[in-house]
Length: 584
Image 1 (cartoon, one colour):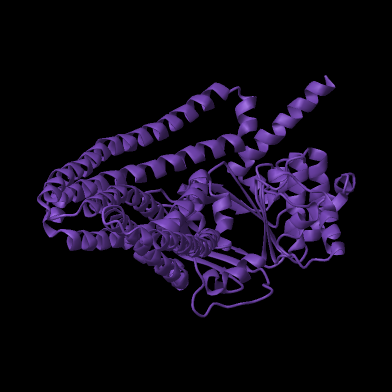
Image 2 (cartoon, helix red, strand yellow):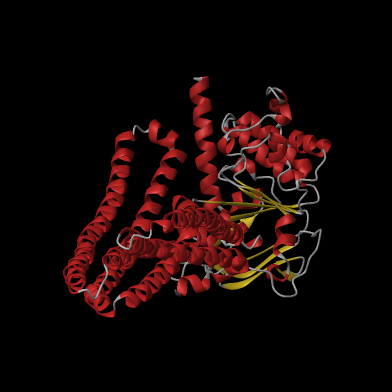
């Protein structure tokens, strides 16, 4: 029950619903045990005893009990569902909130499909046990105990003989639970992998089709689907192994009951109606205990789901606000790196090593280097997406961890290399980081990003609804809207992570021209592979293997004949050759 104890805060505040459900469950169970007693009285007193005048009373009494049971069942089920649904509403919100604040490091290893599976099927599995499983477990226990009391009242000797197989049945049930729980946990994990497979395939369908890899992804899905099938079949084999044994032990009790009970009736120490009632009561003990396997199944699934949910809730978030974090609306944008080293994992090599530089407010810093050299990693330290293992990152003279995360990130405009747009209007996408922005401010941001013209050509202009991930727009259009979104925030620090990589040369020229005005008064970091995008920077840092290989202005770096010079030669010599070929 450790899993349920850890999740107690989510369901215990709503215990009143659970208590009402249990109260009416007691009523229903009590009425259930009364049925065999009425049957016994009908046989012994009315049929064999000739008391026909009892028939109307028994009939109306039985109808009244049925009505009460029906009403009780309604309240029991409704309050039980209210308990489960309300609890997981709070749980699902907590999971989603935790996912929003977990650091990038968590998502480096997480799978989208698996996370979706946890927030849907695992939450639902946990809810079903809260709504039904808890109360059903109590119902079975109460039904068994109350039935045992009635049977013992009728005949202690027959009770002992009838229930002689009960200890063996209990042992089988608990062996079943120990086997089935790991199997259901394996099913949950396999289902998460299957979800991830589907999600990745749908997200990358363009790549799949463009490379004619349909057969490959089908085979990959078949493998995941086959693993899920095998896990389920293994669990079914456990069920098939234990349930016939449970049923055999239950039926063996009936054999003992009819044999010894029949003998007692012949001897006159047990009345026929009591034997019939006894037969009904045995079912109230044996079948609940056998049904305990079903409840244990629910418990196992719910426990496995709860464990997977706790993995999210208990995930460590090492990037949080300190107790007395500084809240500020506007930063100057003075950025200082002092001997900063970054490592993503304990066993990984350094992504950045002893990085030191100073970007004064309003200056433009260019970052260039091969893929994996650490350009993006460097800028992600400013926003505290990651924490350095050594050194300090300071903004306006203070370590970034002294500021609240909200203060830091609201002052940094980030245009990522891969632009992500939400399934909402263009207007909502541009004002996403600043919902209170006026329409004039949204239009101004779009104009500066060279996006206004093509937006106005769309059927609904700024009210045009975008498809998933910006479907319906070209790569360049999506990137310009992402730039407008960053401009709309009016940041003190602007980070352009290869922001013009998806646009043509003409559009890039327009954006660069517009960004010159946007950069005024802002500290700007330009990450680019093309020298043309950053050659006007006040300082250019050339990164190699996580280290600053050289630094300086465009003109200074060309004189050094170092890595920057080699990049320049590769890019511009190719252009000169192309121009000569075109002229020729």
